[in-house]
Image (cartoon, rainbow, N blue to C red; front, top):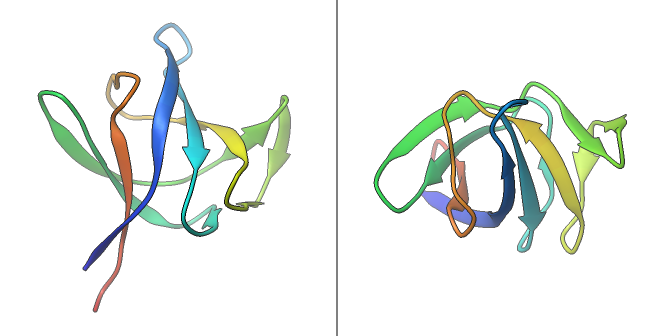
Length: 85
């Protein structure tokens, strides 16, 4: 079951960094997520996150963070936490 956890608000293509607004539950380094957008979707493991250029291990609902992404994304793309259930 996939749980929607946030959405992309910005994308910096030269850095390949997406700014994610975390909405429903916390997001942490090591989580596997699916990013689903306008024309594609892909899975990846969160390897690092930053808030205001400081590395963090966990982001709580209501916060925004930057994550490195493997493929280009667009504002409005949705982030899902992949679960094994």
